Image (cartoon, rainbow, N blue to C red; front, side):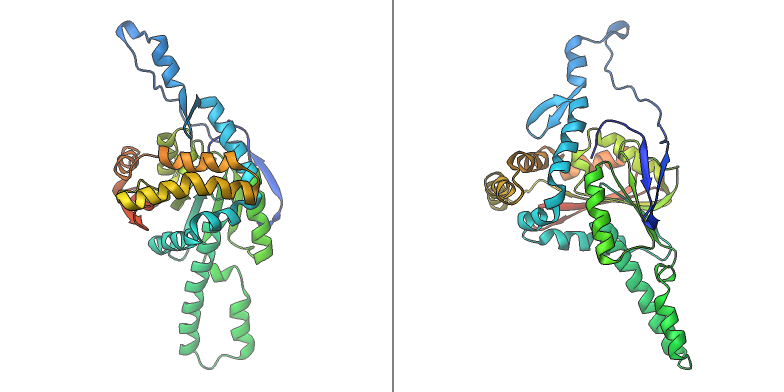
Length: 327
């Protein structure tokens, strides 16, 4: 999600709830004005260049960041419940599939952007811990002479159970991060997990830092998607992977009609009944319709510098997993 630029607050869960204030890296400015003769640009072009969409509404780029922030601040407390209601629970399967496509290796450094509630981060930690446990079981079978004390000690070391893997959750919305931290404490996640307030368009990380970058149902809310993709490319190590889970444009005519009816007539009503917020969920539905097609988005990822870009449709094309490599 995109919002007005600000200082970035780092909050590390893996060492308690201490917070450290850091300055963020400012990427070089990019000029996007179309120039006419003698470098002049008409007023109408300047107006169009500063406008964007907020759902089906046309707003200035400066307005959109604030409006999106307010939407997610409003829905944060009911976000998980509404995800289950809106998708009939299928969003959990989509996120599981994203992890299976990632298949993180021991020591993977993951950046999950717009992941404030922790859904991808928790799945990542579960995945690498399960990998570690399988490895431990194989080793224990090969060392039958270990005592019970030695076996228990192997399973008690939480840091070692991640094999050096780590996930950084980055979200611009403090309320979403607050919910994620509460869930992490309730579920006992401590090691290998950190939280940071940051903008997808100006990530507060050094170049070539992460092995994997994920963003699930978040990139459509960014004001400048192309800039967010360039930032994803910048912070990934050479050989790093980009993985994006996002709603797509349904090609099947029957599924598309049913999907439209459910989206525009049912989801906003659910938002009003469950979260007391019709307008926010109306925006979320409209933002899905404004997102580029699978092929258009694939081209945007390639333009950002990624190679071997593919997409995989899920659930009759309702969502897609886009992936690419930084070579």
